[in-house]
Amino acid sequence: MKRRLCLMKGGAMICMIVATALGGCTKPYESSIPSVSFVFTCSLVQADYALITTPGQFKKVTKNQNGLPVGYAGLIIGQSVFSDGQTYVAYDAACPVEALPNISVDLKNDGIGTAVCSHCGATYNLSSSGFRSDGKGQEVLRSYPVIVTGATLQVRN
Image (cartoon, rainbow, N blue to C red; front, top):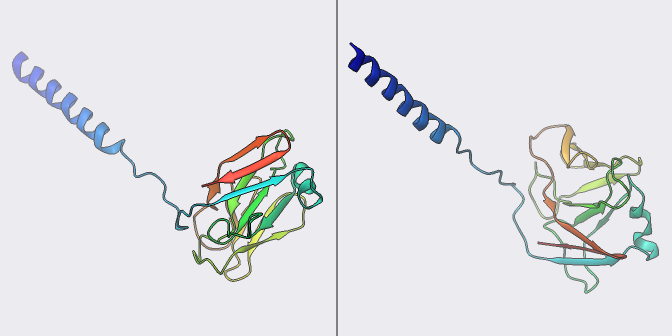
């Protein structure tokens, strides 16, 4: 009886280990927006980009200083309303619902960071990691890392 109980406990332990190993492996998030290589650099003291030094302000760009496209459908750069004034974010302007290079979200000038797709109506909150706040679709906007050195902002993928 003790041996049977021990086998049952050991079998249960093995089942728990296997279940944890299999259940703990989730597929990493993959955006419907393709990964494209680009480099975007700007000076935060230039008139065109000085606005984004204020939290809650964003700017959409489609080309870098050399005239080359950035992102899949453009790039949105700025600061969350929750920013300390030094933390910048960048998103691809492509709407994840449409996932096409010629359909991008447009910025609302609301001071809190709202982007809307004029094609499907999805609304995204740029101050909350690009999460969808209204409309269809479940994906967030594709984000990119931002590096700020002095007054120079750089986004690359």
